[in-house]
Image (cartoon, rainbow over all chains, first blue to last red; front, side, top):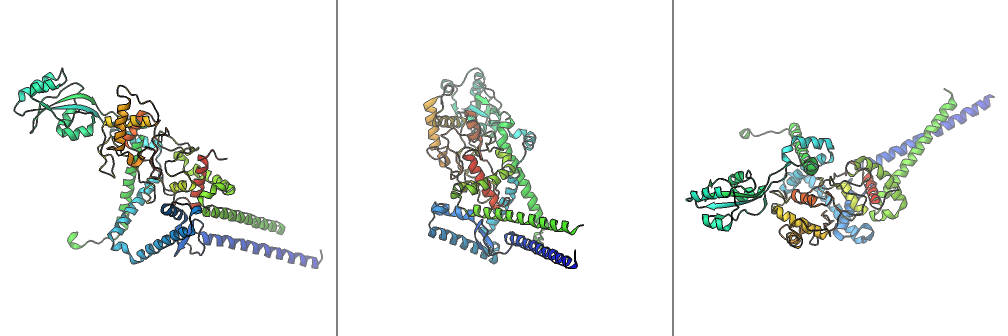
Length: 295
Length: 255
């Protein structure tokens, strides 16, 4: 190879190198530009495709725009008139502008509604994090096993509450004895000069019976077997004798039947823990000064 | 190292960068078109459907299949809806409606979530934490309601000694009156997809097998299924891709 050939070859090689270098640099610039204009938080003049507008760089989401169109006019984008589209967009831009102005004015420091809404929003945000974490079946089963007593069926009873005159203890005692072998009939009640309370008598859940009978009578009733009567119970209003027609006591629920409630309880507990943790964190990082007289 | 090899390597690197760049640009453009497209019009665009469905399938497998199952068939034992049928609890099953669920979830604590309706637990002392005016029902009331629902579903309503017309009539009166069921499920019991209240006249069940026991369980202890909000966790494009995939699932298995 002559010197001229070598020189030409070197020139051609370095030209190729420069071309390749330039191409590489150009590609880099294109990629950097792409990243620059699409990264979150970057100031841009391009409205991202997922948004319909940027208001001081704050996006107005396209999905919200479509939803608003649907809510206001009951139409999708294809069927909305240009006036409807413009109206919805203008309203959303106006709202965004006012929200931004509200932040500038710090309305949260003075407006109790805004404060309340912000507190609710932050609490919901914390809860949303807990909702996102789907517990495994094993976690649910462990939770179920640890809180077994919560998952029982609601008891059901049909009870008669026979009320005797407070001065007629003998009749009440006689009735309690008789009711061990026979159900109360109107004729028997008439003979004992007793009356049946109208508060109970139908089949009802334990919680309802507890409300209707009162705590102390309910405590006696729930332990009665079918077809049995209580001993006379003296109360201020009357002497009561309870006759149990039918008593289905609460029974433990298996995991499959209780799963939905277990999941709800598990989630609620997770939300409570998360909120408590977040609040503790907020308190820890905050500087809170309390007036001398309130310390 | 030979100069020639370096040049080839540099050229290959540049070529790779260019190819990757072109692919990224292509993807970016398709994502942009997908996001800007009117959701109603997407099913008519085969290219966008194919693009979104393919990517949506992978996203579904990663984020949704844990609950909905790999095939999206759901699980009535856990109250997970079947996404492969055309029965929709929330909205009408359009891509826009599905996207809204994926975006904001159901009872997800997101302020824009679907969370208007919660099935009260009528067999408890306090059926609704939200509405203290909703009264509990008695076991007999609940049996009557179940009889009424079975009647509306065209099932055999005879049950032990208490059959038929009397129980159904009592159930109907409760449904339209004191039970307050009509408020969410509509007076014809056909539900309201605007609030996620299911149609009670068909035999499609979200919880259980539609048996008397399952219905009794739902009425007694209430229901309030949850779907998390994915907004902020998935990109807007990914959310729309999932919505397109689910839309395709509901209209027959994706290719």
